[in-house]
Image (tube, rainbow, N blue to C red; front, side, top):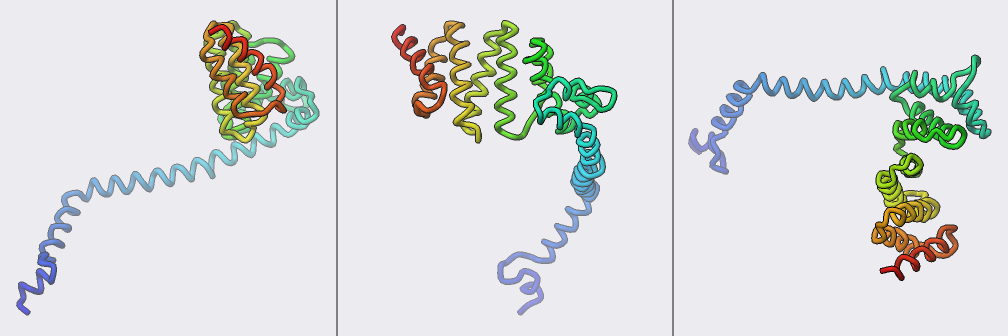
Length: 233
């Protein structure tokens, strides 16, 4: 076999030219490649540094700070859990001092419950619910619906109906489907009925009557309101 044949091989590709071209490409783009690889490494290093050197210690500190408030929340003493006292930090203070943690999200939720149910301060409740961000589907649905409720209480019916509908839709794919979907379907339907948007209301009510049986608490009222709105068409 000739020397040239050795270079090209059976495929007809000139191997020496191929390697030379690769080397030339690497040489010409060395700085760019190095910068890209450095950036990738930097992203991974930054991610792990943020999570293990910053976020985890921050979460641990917040969890320790919330021990007493959590105990009061567990025994339904929401006011003490939220306000705290000189001996322990309440959820309201935790939400501020430990902002950006999962504990702060939980704190904001309980603050929302406190201002909604005990103080009837719906704007304060709304502000807290909007800060409560949960990865858990059931809690996320509950927070979304609570935001809708607060908008309705504040007279923002369009906004409230939109959030309640969002909660109803999300409920259909959540673990709390059997409990929360009929509940938020009916709530959203009532607000849309008040707004005169009967088509939206009917669609939400049908979501309950088509997908659930009469064992759910909202079924009978949903069926009754659906019949009323359908008769008006």
